[in-house]
Length: 185
Image 1 (cartoon, rainbow, N blue to C red):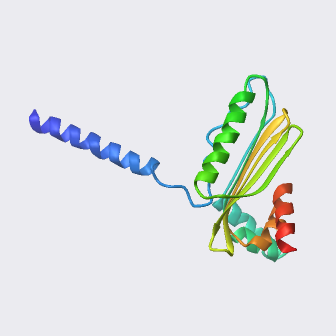
Image 2 (image 1 turned 60 degrees about the vertical axis):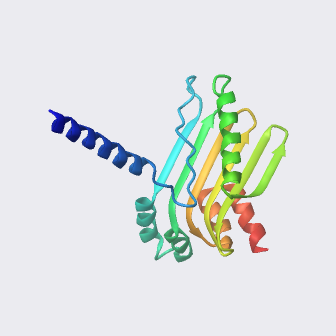
Image 3 (image 1 turned 60 degrees about the horizontal axis):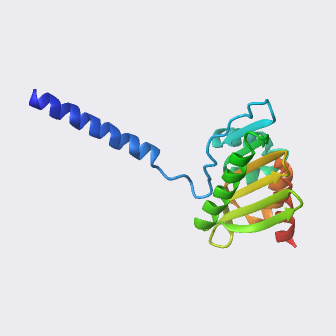
């Protein structure tokens, strides 16, 4: 009985340790965990897009012949995540708190805030994580569009700064497009 108890205890410790290492793995350098979002209970706007490396690779193969410059940018990407959440009276406080927490975490982890716009009730923040001075590992765009919606974007991969404008244009991320335009000038 004693050996059975020891065996069960050892198996439990091993499985907890294995589970901890799976869940404790660090995210890639440019990836940010925004957490899980849920649609507003009142049926407000909710968009969730997760484009992973396998889908990016497939898109790259389709674009290589007709748009080789776009395909080259896509080859460096690992993930594109976009969340758009309609804000209601019920979720506004939670969303606003989450935006502030994400921004604080990014700054604490060494992300560089390159755009901050606060105009009327709009609030935009754009952050980049760089490796050396010639490669962007990740881009995060956090937007509070008045009291209507919040937008969270994370682009992960090795991106040259001069490619940001094209990436912003192709992914329809205006703040990213504008940043790329400024870097190119």
